[in-house]
Amino acid sequence: MKRLRSALTGIAAAFLTAATAAAVPVPASAATPAAAALTEVTGFGYNPSNLKMYEYVPRNAGAHPAILVANHYCGGSGPAMYSGSEFASLADQHGFIVVYPSVTRSSKCFDVSSPRALTHNGSSDPAGIVSMVRWEQQHRGADPNRVYATGFSSGAMETNVLLGDYPDVFKAGAAFSGVPFGCFATTNGSEWNSDCSGGRITKTPQQWGNLVRAAYPGYTGPRPRMQVWHGTQDTTLSYVEFGEEIKQWTDVLGVSQTPALTDHPKSAWTRTRYGGTGTTAPVEAISVQGVGHNLPQSGMQPLALQFMGLI
Image 1 (cartoon, helix red, strand yellow):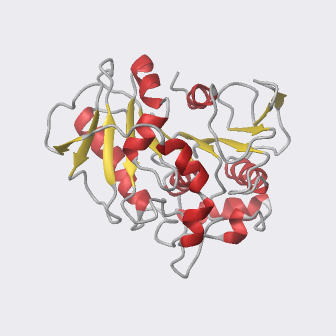
Image 2 (cartoon, rainbow, N blue to C red):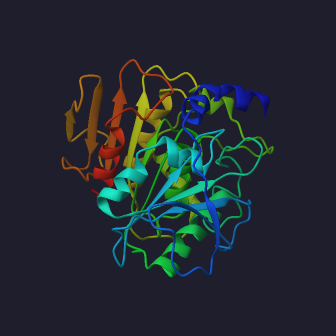
């Protein structure tokens, strides 16, 4: 655990400099959220790992708004993610709800390692987050066909896990500085996997894809589209795993690993699209030259939302 905390000190410090917004607890029976303010929701359903739920409902949310789940980094929280990211201001512009899950275990890292986290209808963080999504659908009229996930670092890893566990819930995701689904898997109770973080776990596309498919045996429906971002100088979660994520999601989505398009949204960003050339291609990957474990940078979050189809 000490290793886990020290490994992610830099990214946590960068985001925790943002002022944590106060959130007013509201019971799940409340009929109306505090519009344009961060609000804690309690009693939202099955919550096996004691997560907290925060929501941001913009004033212009329509009758059936989309949902974006925004997962925080290690050492962070839902309110810190709210304060330190652009998602709330983008929600104000485009009318979608943002759900900010908040880890309460001491590490403040999402569970992306345990067998109970890496399975559909398991008994860890992903199940609690899906309860939050379903609460929004039941109580805010949110559109079940427009549910998306994103996150930074630990939250990026959780984004991979959510899309793997719940292809029937999430339509697309964007992971900033993460690793493939199952890469951090452990069976000894540890939250940290040094082989994965150090880039020493590589697999064939089919092997990575099989890990995702095994999370929900028998599922034959559509799979969520995936966007991944990574800095080439990341020493916390190796840049090697960026390529492994591409292998995994191209296999899961059944598209070629050969890019259909390569361009540069900014000079240091190399974007590749797989299975299509448009904004909503099945898989999109953005490599950021010379950058370490401190994504996202300015302009990245709107591109993530464009990929999802939220803006």
